View 1: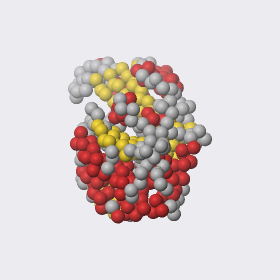
View 2 (view 1 turned 60 degrees about the vertical axis):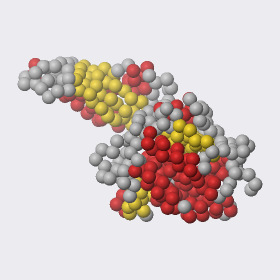
View 3 (view 1 turned 45 degrees about the vertical axis):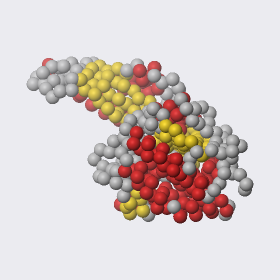
View 4 (view 1 turned 135 degrees about the horizontal axis):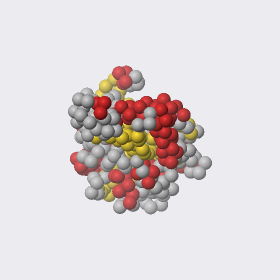
Length: 405
Ligand SMILES: [Zn+2]
């Protein structure tokens, strides 16, 4: 085995407690989207402490660190988000306690807590990699950059700001969103569609005088489920296009009035072969078919759904036939894990898309399993987290290059 890799592995093993306590500290700081100032400050302090040469923040509390290279190699940037979704009824969400993984059906010890898998383990690993690189005394040829961003869960405003206002990018981007230590090359697009279902208000004591928009919405939702969802296309790379009705806003939203209107939000995750126009067409088709049986049914698709999307496809894919970095990163990961990582795509969307749209190769690699993200079972395997620290350190050495080897 390469002696530098041996040193990296030794350094992570030696600093195991330090790495674990850093991750636990991150989990213990609540950081629901738009409330990231405390965790951002904490990350900045840590970046400085472990030896990043320049560390800066911006008005959105993004934390950006650079471990300066000799400007003779490629710059690697690892992106991870600091924010997380609300905890709901999760038990001890900010404990960061170590548990036996068997309760979640996984092997070995895990660290439990909101955002452990999505994605504080990856953020901790990318910062700890800076510590390890300094500990083993390598001098990088290119820059190793970490971008710990905010507001990912609410649309990616943090990453967009780091790119647009700070030009904080690299030649190769790794995003640490959960891949279960495999390689992810992209994900489907995401679109939201609004549908209004019209009714007619009246006093709830005499419902027959009106037309209940909730009842008609229920019919629309049922038809979407039985007639549309089963026939959505499956893409070779991205998998199946999915639709979910995720919101219903009722107007008026009071207990003694038959509602006159419902606004449904439909979340669609699509392959490039299923456009916003096609979604609109399909929803209209469902509306028409209900109308043919029930002439008083009245619903329409809100126009913003189409107008707002400037890109035809809002997902991304880093094609291995176009970008040799995919093969390289796969090989470097294999060096560390001593197994060939699987190549996959995410079900959810990531900030990786913003870099990919600039033509930069974006490759996903992170600890944590996608199936536990946003669940009450959120956790990360301890060994995977530590292996992620090793892998990010090795990726920095391999992609940026090192002096005197
Ligand atoms: Zn995430």
